[in-house]
Amino acid sequence: MRLPVTPYGSARAAFRRRLPVHPGAVLLAGVAALRAGAGVLQLAAAESTAATLSIQVPEALVVGLPETGDGAVAGRPGDPLDGLVADADVVAVGPGLTDIDATGELLRGVLDVAPKQTALVVGALSHAPDLLVDSGRPVVLTPNLTEATHLLGRDPGDDLDAEAAELARRYDAVVSLYGHIAAPDGRCWREESGDAGLGTSGSGHVRAGLLAGLLSRGAEPAQAACWAAFAHAVSGQRLAPRFGRIGFLARRLLDEIPHTLATV
Image 1 (cartoon, rainbow, N blue to C red):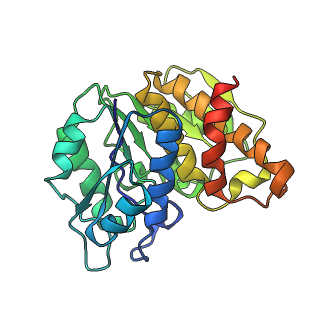
Image 2 (spheres, rainbow, N blue to C red; image 1 turned 90 degrees about the horizontal axis):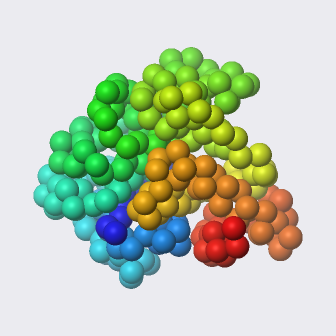
């Protein structure tokens, strides 16, 4: 199993034109994928951060990509990213990207070379909202509320089940909107055990990587999204007795993932 190529960035920052680089996001997502059972991890990040990431995640092949003057991944890096994507079983784009102008181009480049059967975890579709419609690809979208606003063209309402279902129909993909999961065929699920602590910075990156890891093990997109939401929530529950409901850090979730999955 080869998993996943993950350009980095800040999901919350995706709609601002210029922001500092955030290599911690790709570290959290990549390690979460390994913790969920991914066999081979490949990380692609801006050249200026690749060496640091390779030290922080020695289990991964880390490749540096051309970057903009602000340190964001360039829009269409080409080689070596193309080769990694073409051989990957799952590709995670994000979590988040720092340059709004380059994000759509990057996603188009990934789609140009990724085989049709390659599963995609996408958190940056709001930059190119119609790109995956009718693509026939196995895709899971993982928007936050800001990204959901852009995808819906309005502010999400209080019924996130309905909003996830609308996004799934509109973009022909499984949608994981926090604990609200929907498939394009109308099936819906909800994970209700998540607590306030999962709102901590970086938690969404962990969930995206966890999802990619489960896809790499052969789970279908809807199944992987449901299991990722469950494992993410229960990992947070396991931390609460030690750190409090809102006192743990996203990196602490990583060590809980294997035990959570093993005890199901």
